[in-house]
Amino acid sequence: MTAAKPKILLSEGSSLSSREAITALGLAGQRVDLLSSDPLCLGRFSRFVRRVHRAPAAGADPDCYLAAAIEAVKSHHIDISTRCCRCTNRPIYWPPPASACPLALE
Image 1 (cartoon, rainbow, N blue to C red):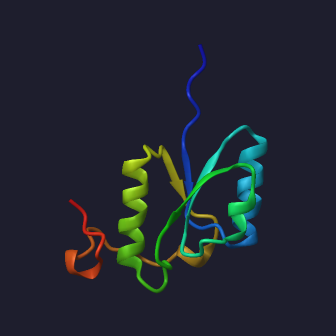
Image 2: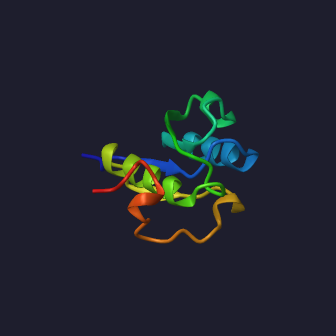
């Protein structure tokens, strides 16, 4: 019996860095989910991407971005969440204020 492969969520899908990560993970037998503010992000068109979760841009609204990431992790049972580039290397505070985002956490 083999162990189930972990479900992976990448922090964005628009950059060439994310496209490279998607391809590397895919060629290793993984399938990934993306978190993106762009519904037509570059990563969406990879055969290795299972689904794209919509989220606001991390730089524009970090609280809502974090809430969307947590919602994706919870609702789709994601095992690993990682960033692909420095665009999401901003401090994100936890817990986000409930008034900061319509995606209030429970």
